[in-house]
Image (cartoon, rainbow, N blue to C red; front, side, top):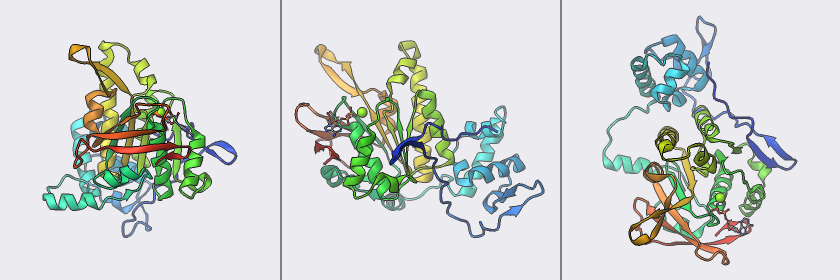
Length: 352
Ligand SMILES: Nc1ncnc2c1ncn2[C@@H]1O[C@H](COP(=O)(O)OP(=O)(O)O)[C@@H](O)[C@H]1O
Ligand SMILES: [Mg+2]
């Protein structure tokens, strides 16, 4: 069976250096009788929630469900499910299977009125980031679960700092965090200083803060797929459009393939947001886009896939690099006026 486990490159600097920190199994919300695991004839123990499944490939799906958990299966798409079942030639049946899985998991699409939707949204947990104006001025007052944040800006604006800060703060608040680093430059000391700032030390966060250094694009995809099995509360990719990605997909003729891969990653994150309420932070560099009259406009390197896939897109600016300050501007944040400015100050232990 195709397995997607976290690569052994997951590292985090603890007291004694760098070590492999596997994510602990997610605390499943137990169904009433989940302790009574019942054995089926095949001698594989299948939890109750899986035994209710009666769709196509009953035994195979039940076994898969026992391994992944029903909700985790529900977060997959048809192709991923079909691959796990070795049924890639039968996508139509896989579709039926997935629909049944989602129905059982309670994540099937159901129409709700606007008020209900609004209420459900407001119930999603929010944490304060420690960037005072961000926490004051964003409509949800901090970092909210279930949203995909796009944080774009030039180098040195503080994107990585913001991403690290949110990760550490979220872990301090009890969220399970996976920080995926793609640029080969990870400021581990900053993790430590920020933890201290929020009254914690890294060792106390080890069970819920994992750092993964991805060497290439494929790594990132595999890590995201593995998260369907072990969902996190916050996923950070710093940065989403890595230099490795740009190097791998050079030239115009490969642009479509590149964007397709980005779209797929975005789609995994979107499903995780919906099924598990996972929050995501995607940092992104900016590129110069030539406009009329030889003017240049800076736009996120991820293009439309990135800009439209993010639920909250903000740009970071730091005009004067000799000053340790900058500001964020909402490019596309629902409920936030585009002329809002979020000022921040850069210090040794993060943004303020
Ligand atoms: N202690 C510190 N650690 C890291 N960066 C710092 C520190 N103090 C000041 N800075 C400045 O803050 C900026 C942080 O940038 P960074 O978050 O790496 O930006 P980006 O990810 O957008 O390129 C850098 O320009 C750096 O010079
Ligand atoms: Mg950076």
